[in-house]
Image 1 (cartoon, chains in turn red, blue):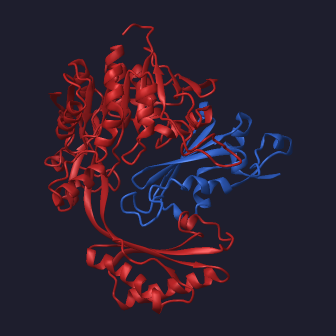
Image 2 (cartoon, one colour):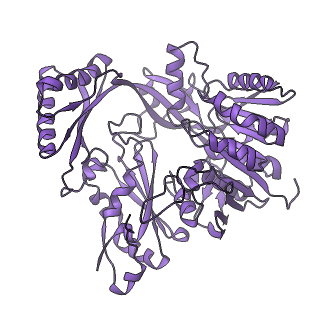
Image 3 (cartoon, helix red, strand yellow):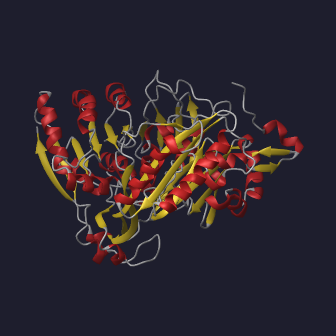
Length: 453
Length: 117
């Protein structure tokens, strides 16, 4: 790619449950060189492991893989847009094979699909990673509850797959910004140790990884920060140059907005020290970035940079940590909060009578204090309607079931004017706790498999 | 005069384990020094009462006219084990918008007011 060429990279997803239509729009009308999908949260891998143990038919990759790929493959393959995606979860080879099947169904032949694996290190994490970052305890304390451990890999294996001719690269756990950085490294020939450019590219990846969060999503606050047509957001497009400067834009005619404010908010999203944002590829420095609106929904970001990468990779370890039982019921009208307070007292006494064995119990008044909890101002106004929402974390499912059973009792044995749902839904769920550690980067080796449609 | 933070700044929260970061961005560069002076890490933590159980660190990003508060122990034990309905704390960034600041009267024209619906 020539020095003057602008590389166009679009977002296709910011999380597993994200909308599909903006990805299709970017594929059709984004004039993209690359379309990148981010579909994994911290607990995704562990949840997938739990499901795979229970359900042998679960293939272990993004459950929306078919929807997403069917929506974008025709346009991407017609236009020559390459795809980078972390939809492989715990089975990137399986995801790659499925994509090949979908390509064949569409009559698209000869497309090379790469599966990047190697992030799963469950079998050796306790030796490689001695200490839990959150509490300083040895990782050996997780020995009996560990479900899955995976290292966050960087962009380099994706770059290798692109260099070896893959048009679609599907990965397991890779750091989110690395999905977007990899095309820049490949197209511009950036040295993996050029921390200034890698920092810039990773910073751009960070701006892109949350999709609509930079195009007006998770932003509107009516009367203070209004956003046009917030029912029709587009996912962002990055126009990147070889120096690592970027202009963010979106497909014309869509809702939302890209402004200096939306870009700033996303720049610090999930960031701790803005001068030292650690990724597998580099340590990004956001504190010298300049944000310059160029026109409607076009914002230029320059000055993103970085510092040399750390010798370690972050590891996420998912562990079984028991169960949560939860349910809610409702009050409205004059005296609603008093009735809710009595209902809370009844539940607290009932939990003693049935000897609920819980690590933590929480009874909130949704409408008053369920969202901000203890941060709710003491003088908050009394609501007209209140939901009593109760949750308990327990070691066994049998204990968690007690929460819903005691809420059932509130139907005829509770307070006057109690509104309640019929308990059809499962009111317990499994808890997968996530802990972090660090492993030497040399101990994690990516492997790449290729499949052709 | 007194003003609420929502008149001076906009905010966004993000999650990592049991830590929430809440970034506060001045709408106007001229308002940023007021934030730096009055919205300290100590006051930020005190404002959230028992909802933040750990240490609060404050980072400054002058180029963004932003303060980034890193609140340890703000997510009920962690996203995955929290009993909160909002276990990612994505609504948490709205709480601090009610923080009260002293603003010199001559800066009143820089303040935002929520437009009527």
